[in-house]
Image 1 (tube, rainbow, N blue to C red):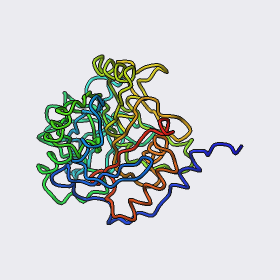
Image 2: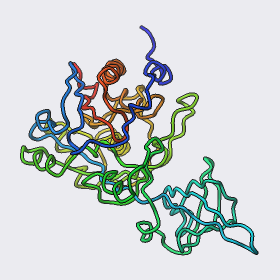
Image 3: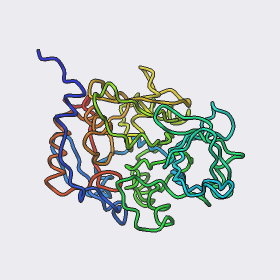
Image 4: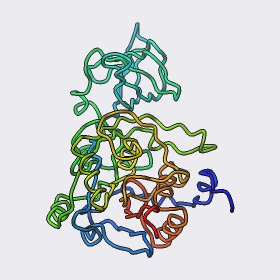
Length: 354
């Protein structure tokens, strides 16, 4: 019997050429009119608002309710004795509680050295350290979070041409159920849902639960070199006691758990103790590859991902390499739109196949 394929081999086999024109620059309007490819024994081509036809009463939808923060700020360098000045683009990543009060990790462009000062609006920060990936540690004089709405912009992905106003994106690049601020990228599978669609699902008896995973900038980081050498950024997550109990009940009763987005999958798998999902909060660097089964969700709603990405390996782990290869060939042939603002897929966990 041949040895199982390695993650590197799967990534090579799943490679495809994606024209830039196929990376969506705007989301469907209304949101639930995006296309939905259903990948099971056969492939179906549907519209996202038809999701109630594809789910069952008693299914448990699990959403990541993290909210994107206005983390991109144009900072000023101080002027000293007539020298200095100029601007620095700051992408705040997350608050680093283990580094002391009011310390954030951030990417700076251009980079600054330890000891340098910056002013984000009227708010002073000092560079107090450098992390292994080049991010800087910024210490603020006070809590910056209440001021981000005023001084910051939403950190749109680098492949989106942000031609519209920040006010427009603050509504569009946010799920309708977003609640807890902390992400620097949207959990984009949820962008297809509307309040009306959620109401229809509730009326037919589909249950809902939420988790929180604050999406970090590492979600954009492609795999370069060997999969084994790829370092995932740590992301904070939380699973409430209510959500853990709802998942346990659904599994015990034979009802399906449906993860909305890869961030939800990563949260549930991080909280899985081998027998059940445990409530609690923590940090995860989980990297899901085809060499491991996905234990908790039975179905996954996700967008179409870029070649060479960790997310492409995750969906191959979930649905199986052959099905993902065939589904992506179909998506390319039929004009599906890719990535954060693109179309969606509904995938079945390979452990249920057969």
